[in-house]
Length: 193
Image: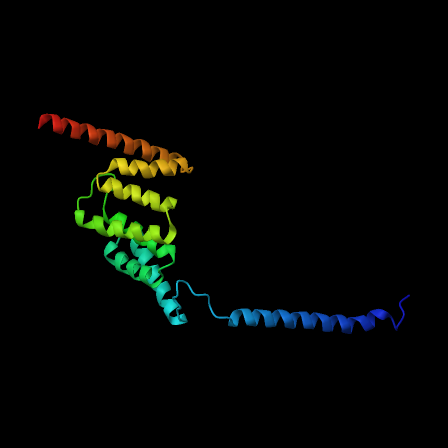
């Protein structure tokens, strides 16, 4: 039988007060966290409007890159890379776009003027994120576009050794075969001359 003056009735207002105090502290902590200044990335602080512009530029650049509209993608990615100098994604996407601009990178580049910008983009990528797997793959493709299968093989060897999987081993085999073929043709050219 329940008593009318049970201690549970006295505890409920105290518990409600405790819960209200806890919720108030949580709300204050969230408010303080949201009001704190945004962390700086490489000394660049962007306003909300500028962030929205950067996001729009990023979306346009990535869409253009996916559709291989390099005339639209390259300027937008170069702009993003300049705006966010410490962020690896604009640098990586610019490097990818520059490699795509070379055309079929399993053959020497038809347009030699596209090689220096691709080299610069890869240098920038390495400065931002180091010698990552993405940098190695792109550098190997650039080496193949320059007709330097031996340099490509060095990158593929590093990828294969780092667990790059079957794709790295296949690319390494192909680069070594191309390097042997190219050195053999150079030897034949020397003998003929």
